[in-house]
Amino acid sequence: MVTRMKTVSWKVAFAGLLGGFIGNGVLGALFSSPPIRHILYDPTIQSRLFIEVTSQRNILISVAGLVILSVIHAWLFAVLLPALPGRTWVRKGAF
Image (cartoon, rainbow, N blue to C red; front, side):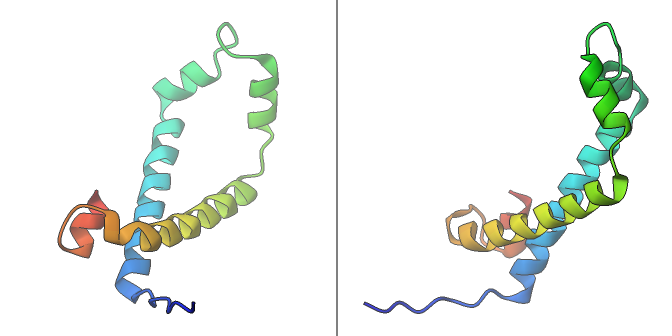
C-alpha cells in the first residue's frame, strides 16, 4: 500500500523553527542570568567536574547544537501539527 506524504508549508516550518529559537533563547537567557549562574557554579552544591567542563565549553559548537535542535523541533512540530489543539498554525505553535 502506497501512502502519499503531505508537504509541509513554509508557515509550519517557520513556526517550528521560530518556536525552537525562542525556546532556546529563553533557556539561554535563563541559564545566563546571575541568580541561576550563582546556583550552577556554587562549589558547595555543584560538582567540581561540572564546573570545570562547562567553563571550557566551545560556545560556537553549543550554538550550532541549538540550531540543530531547532530544526528537529520544526520537524516534530510539522509531524505533530494535526494533533495539536488550536485552529490556526499560530495557536498550534503557541501551544
